[in-house]
Image (cartoon, rainbow over all chains, first blue to last red; front, side, top):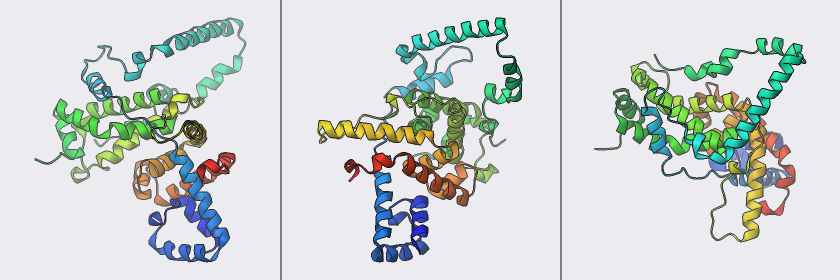
Length: 142
Length: 189
């Protein structure tokens, strides 16, 4: 194994030897024993792993599971909201303000016909995908 | 009586068993949210995505088939695939990583400076992860954060193991490049 192959191994599987494929582990460890450059690459990989580990995710709020279950059981059109939709009212005003601003801009642009190319561009997008989501999401065992 | 498997819970949910649905949510909710949050970089969006994924479970459970019954994927594989695809769909509208994208450090032994440094590192990492192309980010989050093997990540992403390995290589190289100033700091020693 050479230095580039070791770098590739580290980028594929990370810095922990336990995660390396068994057939690559022995040659990689031999290279690490004999090469300071190899050890520098391993340290670089460890530092990246430590940085990534700093990105933690908070625990789930105690009542979130109950709210999700309630939303699923609610009759269609009953208006049970997404967990975040009404629980974070501080975000609501900026969103409404943004919506209003966008609407006003849309009326102005439409009236002035400032962006004649926009309609053509929109037609080239897969609107069903935008409206209904990625078709792969609907994949299910029938 | 032992704990029911995901597939047994799905069978129960298909019969309208609310308790089975709640058990499945309790089992899978944190995994769905942690995956989604690192994919979209925003807690509120991650919770919405998790909810949407569970709604699909509830609506489609009656049609669920295990691999033994002719289905193509185990529940966990299918469920994570749904979450990843919902995230990619959401991520088409790029936004800056907000402060709620990272958790507050919780180690009570940390001094104030360490807490601040760790928070800054976390924000920079969150931003760099968020900037990765969709499939690189998905491969990295599934393998580095969620602890899936390359083989399992390949199943979830409907891809080959070789392709996932290639995504991981490119993701880590991109991260090393974008995080280079951070990686040179003593804090990570």
